[in-house]
Figure (cartoon, rainbow, N blue to C red):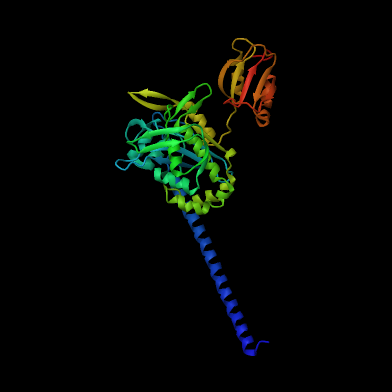
Length: 422
């Protein structure tokens, strides 16, 4: 048995231990309250300055060559991502440019890639130039202003990184899995670029990922490889594919759990005016974003030589449509090809007009494999698309056929049969 002295000592130890726990709990409560108050304060400060900035903003002007229309009200945050070429002896140019429109409340997002050779008018210099040269004249701020006027989109923030920062970000994520479509081999001694990547599914680390997005094949930066279906190829298209792969990596459950921690490491690799409050909000909302809720596109257009120099010339009307769909989140129409299956002259064009009136984006008009289709057919690749075209099928009296192995670059193929009436 314990002696009275030992019992008294034990009781005293218990009293001191309880007192220590109370002090510790009180400190924890005070710390928590302080952090909450600090968070609320930062949110109010951020909201205040965002409000003041909004008051100070003027209506977007419309210089020559820009795309003019009134942007609708929206809840998305627009961030311009800039990848610079890390030039040490001269001001950096932007090697990669894309605009992301993010809605952390719904998880919907849109990403539009802007080819670096896109021809834009720069009012500050009163001249036409490539978009990638704007960074040389005025850094990310002027690039944001120029892209904003070019697309007719309010841009809230920018995130900029160079080659070294890009590699660090990819390594921080633990690499990115991507299916390399072909062997990539290229040497540029002057530029210090040595690329040798084998085809196939693999995880690219920071260094190899940088080589993948910098590689240029015979298509160059971007090319309209199929005007009929508006299919693009080249480095910009490959970069768009890589962006989707990065998004998939970030949205993995194992990565989402680490995002708040990774955020600090990634922050060291970029230059940005995104406030910490927004960065944390996006990080904590990452589980709401899914790949199927993210739309991507390239500024539509074609290459053209002007005064001996090659540029990417944006299709103004088509770019306006893409911005509405991808950036502002307007419903994207189904894409279609319309084929004459009856042999009646002009019937495919007439059917295409009906489709366009139903908000279907007709990419191509042509002839079917034969002219003996008694009934019109709408061929789709899934039940989901079949449900979307049900009313259209009833309108033009067509049968809907599902082909799960369909490999066309449009959502639906409409074969106009003899039963179609103009």
